[in-house]
Image (cartoon, rainbow, N blue to C red):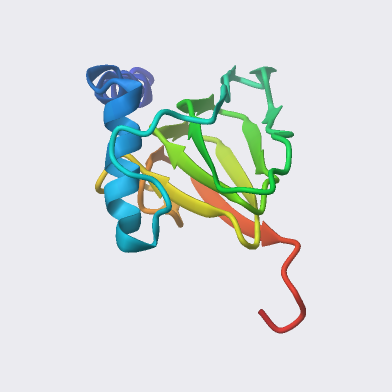
Amino acid sequence: MKRSLPYAFLFAALAFPALASDQQALDQCIASWGAKSPFKPGTPATSVLSTGVKVFGIGQGSTGSDPETSRPALVLVRPAVNVAGRSTIRLANPNGWYCFRSNVTVAGKIAIEAHCNANIASARESGTTVGATDESDKAVAVFGAIRVTRFGCPPGK
């Protein structure tokens, strides 16, 4: 029973993203950004980042490399799932408005590296943590950690 508990959390967490369509997720992110968002509800994603699944160290461990744009870009970030491993998601576009459908980590770590000027939101209104750290408060973390770090910031910012 103890061994199956993290998997129960994982499958429960994965069920939520399946309920919402991509456009519903984007509209939730646009709403969370409010008046500062350059996008209106119903705006489709400029691009999509597929983050992948990593279980016990096997699978895709690092994703990103989206191109820099001269105008605001609405980027849908597909759910990241990490079980007992480490994954890195790099959000390199300073004009990127990144909308996460969901992130899930069980006994692992998801590191989100975002450009200093990038905007990040989640389609989820709140996160769930069990014996874990979720600095974004927008994901599901069970005995793991989800951390957001910024790069490309001017000194003192």
